[in-house]
Length: 293
Image (cartoon, rainbow, N blue to C red; front, top):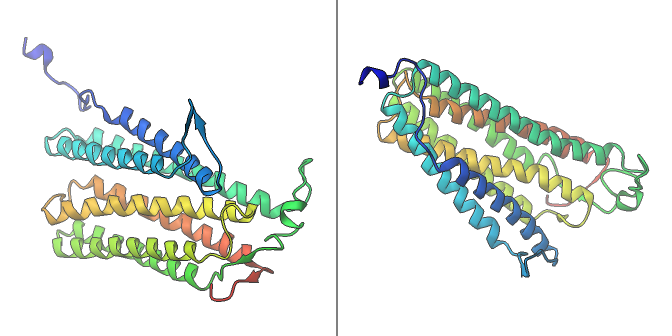
């Protein structure tokens, strides 16, 4: 009887898990909360079965659910790896999964770039849609003063490029069993990620335009804001790797969690370079630069 239930394959059949369902619920609540928050900021309402959901709290409830799911799911995955379930076949499929996830993220950002270029390349009448009243027939719109791309945006570009260097240093240190270099590289990467977020928050607070003022503000904040959210997620991802490294976890033979975090971080870097080149630099050509920004 024991042989009948013995495992004769390299695959890992996971136990029933609550995380996929909880992740879906958290993502839905956070997305709905984002819409509710936007309605709240513009003074609108979001009626739902007699309730007005236009407030920022729904977003943060969803965020807490997502963060809790990330903690629980990653903890289970780490535990499975320690118990020997991550065979070469399973490890390969984990890599395929991360590659597919990043590919889906690429298409997610394609949507925001598409919206930005559609509005900027066709600021006047196009496809029976009159945009002149919103843009003045030019891009950026006549009433918009834009941010200086070679001020805070350039500073943040340097920060992210440096963070890409430090995370690569940490990876090479791990491959050479240099635990001190691994921890130092991750500390610097996490610190740079936090610094980037603070600089972007400062930029948002002092931006000479608002989300609801124009199509320029809407496309700008959606594209750069979602990137900022990805920086936040990536920073948490790397912070988890840092805590594991400080506790003696991960080895040069088995460290897919760190590889996945590094891939994600490099993806965030590349997306920012496209944002910086297209929205900040190209989008400011011929525009009025706001003083002190």
